[in-house]
Image 1 (cartoon, one colour):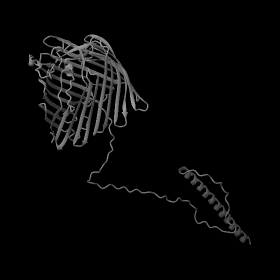
Image 2: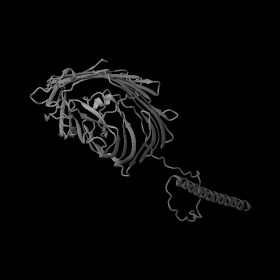
Image 3: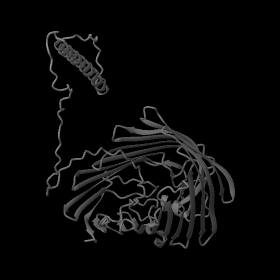
Image 4: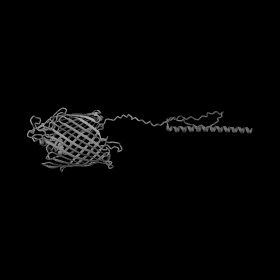
Amino acid sequence: MFNIQKSFFRKCIVVLLLIGSTMMQVNAQKTKKKGAKKENTKTTKETPKKEEKKPQNLLPDDKTVTITSAFTPTLRDASKINFTGSTVLPSNGNPNLNYSVPSQNLFFPYVAGSLRPLALNPQFENPWKKDGFVKLGFGNYSAPYAEAGLAFGDGVNSSVGIHVKHQSFKGNLPEQKFAQTSADINGVFNIGENNELSGKAYFDNMRVRAYGVRNVAASIDPFAGVNKDSLGLHYGTYGIKLQLRNKQQNVAGIDYSPSVSINYFTDNWKAHESNFILDVPVSKNIDENFSFGLGFTGDITSYKSLDTSFNNNIFYVKPYVAYKSDNFKLRAGINPSWDNSKFRWLPDIQAEAKIPDQRFVVLAGYSSYYEKNTFKSLVDFNPWIYQPYNLQNTRANEIFGGLKGSAGSHLTYEAKLSYITFYGHPLFLNDSVLGNRFYTAYEPKMKDLRIHGELGYKVAETFSVLAGMSINQYSNLDENQKAWGLLPLELNASMRWRVIPSVLVKSDLNFWSGGWSQDASQNAIKMKSVADWNAGVEWNVYKNWNLWLQCNNIFNNKYQRWSQYQTLGTQIVGGIIYNFDLSK
């Protein structure tokens, strides 16, 4: 009896122990599930918590539960995207790549800037082709034309270009002849890693005849009793220029570009002129906005003829400070100057402001400067002048304002209004005997209200139109009645159109209102307005061979730029161009 009770008591204890262990395992599993949910909330979005239910005892009292193993919760393996890398098979063909290049909005009015070679990789094979060309032609008025050019160098450390040109004609009027031959050589050389030396040597020979005597177009001989040897005017120019500049800003932030030039000019009547110019500009950037500079210029001229000799010298010192931001630029300086020992302060203040919509830039300023007058510069403007007995430099005080900008991606424009006071401006009066030579008269003081405008339209390298206008209203002259030889209105336009890759069409149009001159009785006469239209075409007919044709003065206007000097009528010149490559 006692043993039976003892055995029953043991069974009850075992059952109680099993029930207790089961309850402990259930509580442990609930704790693990809560921990797993907390970990998942770190990487998933939070969900609202549900109300916790109290655990219920789902086991009936009269059942026996046998535990075979503890419950271990596991997560299902996530699906993963597997990338299998493989190289592309090589192809012998060239891919067809299409590039959309936006149209460049560049405008270079009137005078082309100097070209400089880019810094190419020295390991690049054949970066500079040794190209050349020969251009030959002939036209009416017994007009031969010859031109040739050659470029050579490696394009990395050096490049050199040679250019020669000759043209001449003989008009229908007596002694109406012209001939010009010129040659120049330009070179650019690297010196070290950051310095570039450029140089130019040039020669020019121009021959004209002073055929513009009175009644030159009449049937009578206008040169009766005139020594025709005295009509010849021959001008020769020899010169050289050297310039050194830094290509990149150095550690000190200093930029420099000193230059020196020597020019020798002579005529066939024993007059000669030498000119020496030294220019040393230096600038330094203080920070991204501020900079300052200092420059020195010495312009020395010596003239000598059979009758007289004199010197004409100008010296400048040009200090300035500059401020530059995204929307505003300011440059201010005051330059001490010596014009043949006469000292003057020359202020120079220029400002540019960009309008918020960035469609155009407003510019304004006050500037005082000298225009150097030499025998050569006067001949370049009017080749029929007498030898000078003295030379004066022109001083100008200019107050200006204007705007510039662009409209769209192709159109650029600039407009400028200036009020200028000139001191010592050269004017040109034809003599009262034959009228074929001009005296140079210097006006002590003269006002000029000038309106200048430029307009350009460019479509990549296919089509371009450039136009310019200058209106000058000269007034308040002290000694001269009129501004002799100066034009009150000038309009000019040029067009370049590559119709197809092998055909280039070009055209130029010039218009000006006539200036003032004098008749035989020294009365003021207003010369006629002039319209001159030129057009030409170049056609690549076969490989390196081109044909060219140029037609000048299409309107056949026998006008006069200078009094009594009638120009040619319609002139047609054409020929061939051969391009070659010496590197092959």
